[in-house]
Amino acid sequence: MVEIERVSREVERLGDEMVKTLVELIRIPAISPDYGYEGEYEKAQKLLEIIRDWAFDKVEVYEAPDERAKNGVRPSILAYYYGEKGEDSPRLWILTHLDVVPPGEGWTVTEPFKPLIRDGKVYGRGSEDNGQSLVSSLYAVKALMNLGIRPKRTVILAFVSDEETGSKYGVEWLMREHPELFRKDDLVLVPDGGNSDGSFIEVAEKSILWLKVKVKGKQVHASMPDKGLNAHRVALDFAYHLDKLLHEKYSERDELFEPPVSTFEPTMVRNPADSPNIAPGEHEVVFDCRILPKYRIDEILKDAERLAEEVKEKYRQENLPEVEFEVLQRMDAPEPTDPNSEIVKLLQEALKKLRGKEAKVGGIGGGTFAAYFRKLGIPAVVWATLDETAHQPNEYAWIKNLVEDAKVMAALALL
Image (cartoon, rainbow, N blue to C red; front, side, top):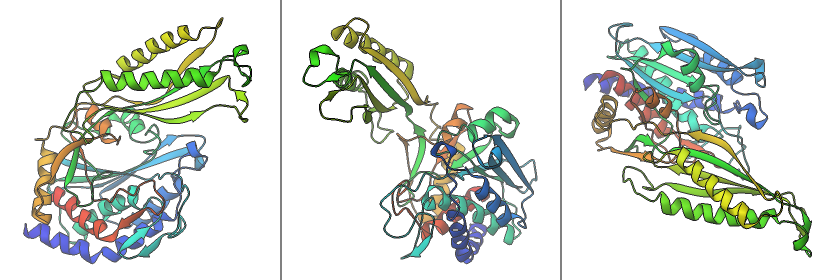
């Protein structure tokens, strides 16, 4: 405990430097080419510049090819600080992501990429998601370096691309192209979710299905509906009955999760009608489904297809309507991390020692890249101290959370 106290004091001493680093990183809009931006290259270069003279034992850069991005790559950085037994030490990964979501609208405190420090907070896009935790992980290790302490565990700081749009060019690519990087006995912390007092440890995630339903009818003047087939009406009928079917059939509860049920939310609609007197020939609706791990996505897709056949028969006019499905995103939930696993117990111990808190273990409906580790059978937890302002206008990170979370991360390496 004495060593943890020494490191905690050093983290506090580094507080101003932490804020400065966060501000520098926020200024660089590392947004995916999926949204028409250049990706994470410039931010990765800034990060490499910041840590150039730090005492990491090894820094590796991996570049997933993506011709849409600046210099045609989506970079990920791994920085190693060896434990007391050198390369033979047990290993702790702390994974954060370089990319941020687009700025969006409604900012009033500052502009998204002009960070502002006010009332103990740092405002800016990416400040909380995931800049706060990225900087906390950096300075947890720097505090160890400054004191000349080799921790019990080798710390691998991973700063990856493409978390916000599916990890195809980030963790998923690393695991596919460089499986040698990962070991079954690794411990993994993903500080990309949590609550405002840091008392929640996420060990499980729901399956995710984003399903687009495309209905084709026949456009016609709205005053003569019998001469066409209103795709809007067909889609409304289908969406209503799909929503009802899914909620009734997949209704069991699992109190590990909040909320403790599967959710099926229609979120987006579109049709080409640009006048009140047009009955459209096309209509799209998107469902965001967050499904308890006990249920299979394939079964839900089969139910949607069976219902589509019933609706098509109900409205049949020659070869219309057509109902097509497009899966926009799919993530099948892996087995949860065992609540009694080493990484969970260590994190609970660290929080008890540093904050006097008994941390609760549970599951969430959102997706993080902890799921990729769980699929490999590597226990991973998601934890951070956050107000959950991610993706919102006026996103901010508390400076106190920046510092206090770094103390917990350092403790994980020492315990």
